[in-house]
Amino acid sequence: TDTGTTNTGGVTPQANENLPDIGATTGVAPTNGAAPAPDDGMAQNVVDPAIVKEIREAALAAQKAAATPPPQKTDEQKAAEAAQIGRHKEGFLARVEERLKEAPQS
Image (tube, rainbow, N blue to C red):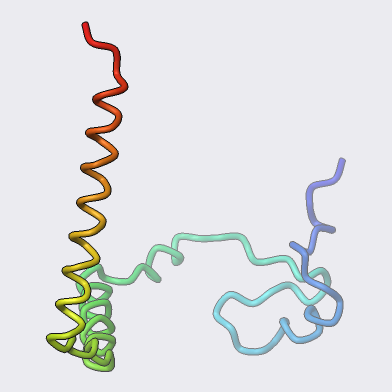
């Protein structure tokens, strides 16, 4: 039976040449590119949630600082937008009134 030792996990021969002996903490077997079996030491690689939170907050702050604020609307733009909303509202109410007239009365 195949125990999976021939499965390289999708590592191509070209990439397999670069993987072994590169000083990575989780290297691969030079013969087949298979990853080593996990051991109890794997749990030591867990990142403290406080550090993750700190990095996330720093990234969000940097993103917010780098973002350019939207341009302010002129009074003319505000008036045009209000007029457009008013026309939309009037059209909507007219359609509702029309549907109410067409609806069967009970």
